[in-house]
Length: 320
Image 1 (tube, rainbow, N blue to C red):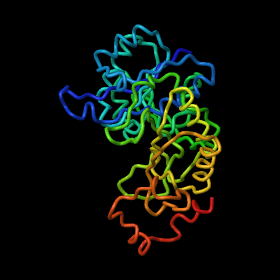
Image 2: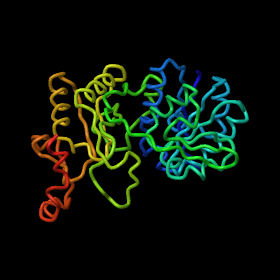
Image 3: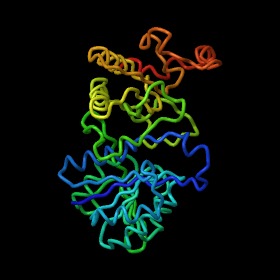
Image 4: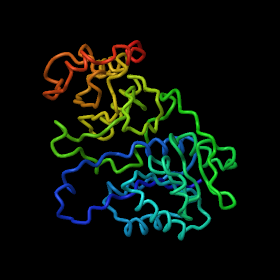
């Protein structure tokens, strides 16, 4: 099957806007993982990262038409991008009326009924998409596919949620070869060295912040340190990457795998600098010896966390 996966464009109407050249442009890793599993199943996959290519909605249409036709069209969307995503869906449906148009990502997961109010959208994939999209591409009957919403006789049907992937190491590495890797960059001043890019080592977070919509569920899942190091090595060898930003919510939560990754970097003599996001109560100093590479912001509240935090909160993660 010929499949197109699309990351919609951001719209910055004023081309003199300072954020246009200051903000980061990072790979759509979710799309790259979807592409990887579809290629693994033998499908022909194209990816358009319209944001990285700096294509607006008008320019997206001829780009796609020149490379079509496609039988399955997948579009990811967050809330700021949903308008562009739906407009592109309408244009794709006009080009190829019999193609299946699928929307996924955070916004369609939270508001599938709203998204399916657009007649051009055939299916919504809710939550984690790899196995769900595999079954859609295999043309299984929709009523048998977990994790999707669709219209039937004028009513929206929500199939049962799909179980999350337990073993993230079972996934292939993201299909970086389908992305414009030369067009990605960190935000101005965010990296010590370039080229730099982002990587994900986990899904989920041990935190229970009330403001957060946990699309990956309540359980922290992690890739092995060896698998993450394998991905970093590929990025260095193929694309010359010198710095990695781990975009995980809480990269340091699983001490064992952080240590395994760091050891693999040392053993592989990788010329690498890296940064990550974490929670202050999931930061383990023994994993990051020395002061040169460890920077905590002033007034980080660490002493207050130590005094008031629940020592049992992350016991399960710390034992791993």
